[in-house]
Image (cartoon, rainbow, N blue to C red; front, side, top):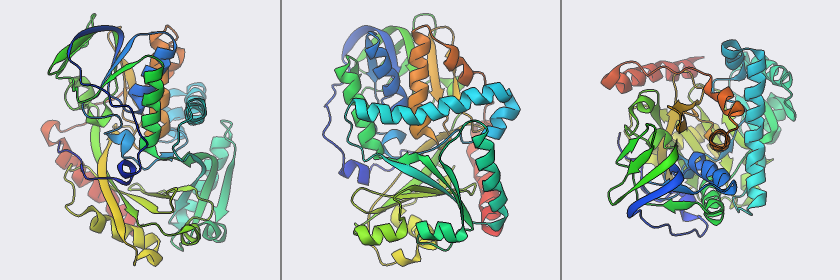
Length: 425
C-alpha cells in the first residue's frame, strides 16, 4: 500500500496546539496497550484511563495522522450498509440495538466536545441528496423505516425545497437529518488525545509496532522498545497493514480525496449551503461536501481501490465540485489531500476479539467519524467486564476479500462498473 499524501491539508494548516508526545524507548508494562492514536484508539484509551486503567497508546506517526485527521468530518447516522441489511442479517431486535449504538455514537461526540472543551467547529445538520428521480421514493421509505427504530429529526425535501438549501440544480430530492452533522476532524482527534493524556494515558508518537503478540500475554515491540499488557486494543484500521494478518485479510484500504477552496466569504458560502449542513449524495461512489468555519468549500469523494494517488489532486477533484456547483469554476484551490478509508466486504464494522485479551475494531466503511469513537468505548466497556454492547457489534461475521494478492485489481474493475452505473442511471 502506498502512503497517502503527506502534503499540507487544510486540517493540518488549521490544527489546534497539541501535546508533543515522546517516542517509546525501553520496555514498559501497563494494563492496556492500544495500537493507533485515531478516534478508535483514543476513545478506548480515554474511557479506560477514566476508569483507572494504566494505558499506553502506540502511534506510528502522530496523533490523527491517518483517517481520523484526514476525513470529510461528516457525522452520519447508522452504518454504511444500511439498517435494512442489519435487520436481514441479525433480526429486528439486534438491528434496534445496533441503531441505538449508532445514535449514541453521535451523542458521544457532543458529550466529549462539551466535557473536554474541544474546539472543533462542531455543527449539526446533514443532507442526503439524490441525483435521480427514481430515488425519491427510496428517500421517503428510508425516513419511514428509520423512524420505526425511533429516529427523530428527519425531513424529506422535494426538488424545490432542496434547491432552497443548496445552490445546485443537480438533485431530485433530499433527506435532511437534524442529528447528523460535521466537525474539524483533526482538532476533534487532538482534543481526544489531550483528554486521554490528562486522564493518565501515555501516548507515544513515531512508535510503530513492528510486531505484536495477540496471545494470552499481549505485547507489542517497536524499534526502540516494547510494551507488555494485560489487554490490547488494535485500532489501526486502514493503516494497520499486515501487522495482524487475520484483520488485514478482512479489510480493504480505499482512497478518498478532498479539496479546500480559498475562503469564499460568508455570503457566497451560504449561497451554496444555506443551513451550513454536511451534504452527501446517494450514489455508490459518493461526493461529500460542507463548509469550513472560515467559509471554504471542502469537497471530497472519488473513491479509489488502486492505492495510487493522482499527481494533482486539486485538478483531479475540481470537475466533481464544479459538476455540483458550476459557480465555483473560478475559485482557487488552496489545499488538496488524500487518505484511506477502511472498508469491509459487507460494509458492516468488523468488531471482535482475538483470544480472550485482544480487542479490535475496524472497517467503518466511510462512517467512522461517529462509529469509531463508539467502538472504542465499547471495547473499553468489554475490557472492564461489561461486554453486552460490544457483543452486539461483534456478532457479525466477516469474510476476507477474495483474490489474495490480486484483490486490488479485481476491486478496481468492480468499481468501474459502479461508476458507470452512477453515470448512466
